[in-house]
Image (cartoon, rainbow, N blue to C red; front, side):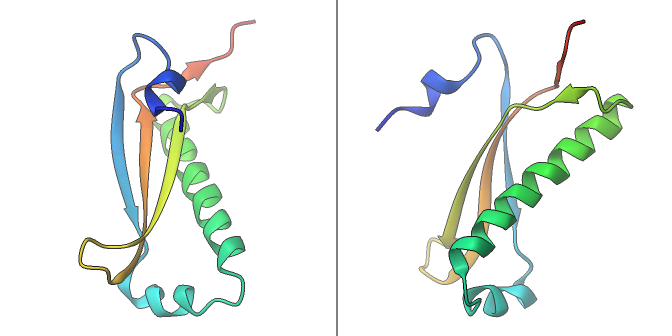
Length: 97
C-alpha cells in the first residue's frame, strides 16, 4: 500500500475535513439497493461541494482543488455512521495561461 504522503504536493499545506451524512439519512443509505453506487456519488458530490465552496471564496471558477477522499462507514463503536475524511489542500490551483 502506497502512503498518502507520496501523493501530496511538496510545500503545500493540507487540512482534514470530515463530512458526515445526517443521522436521519443513515438508515436509508444503509438500506440502499446499490450501496457501492451510493457511496461513489456521496464522494463525488462532496468533492463538488468543496470545490464550489472554494471557488466562491476566490470568486472565480478558474481554480481547482487538490482533494483526497476516504470513506468510512462505521464509527469507532461499530455503529453504521457513513462519513468521509477529506484531505484538502489549503488554497487552490489556478491554471496559468
